[in-house]
Image (cartoon, rainbow, N blue to C red; front, side, top):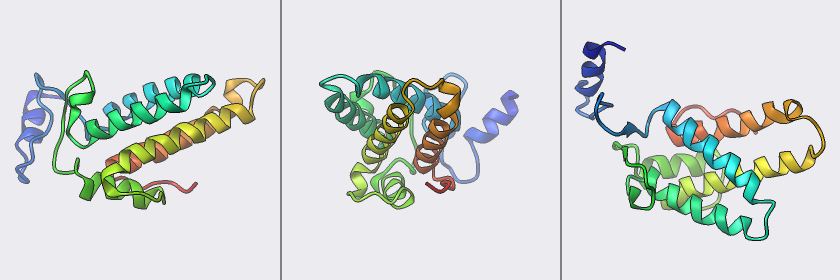
Length: 157
């Protein structure tokens, strides 16, 4: 991307700052959210096979909830957030788009917990089969969560 294009994104007409070449990663970027979810999903699948696994998923989901709400004190990585990263927007969208019962302020946390348990169920149901067999289903689960976190259309369950 050229510097002019990046500068234009940073100073668009809405007044909402976008990514800058030397600033923190933009949390409303598909690539950034996808990376966070892939790391979380892989670790959650691994941990859910352990005795304290659900506790880890809850704690990490809570930490990432704070990150997605722009209160990243719980996460070692600092991200740039915008007006979307509030309970009224990202939280409400996660609850509505994924049809989850919960409060808007906990929307990202609930979305992450659903993603982790759905992925673990797929892996467990396909135990002993090659990963290529069920990888598309894991991708669909990840896509649903990513899109809910970004306010994009969420494919059906």
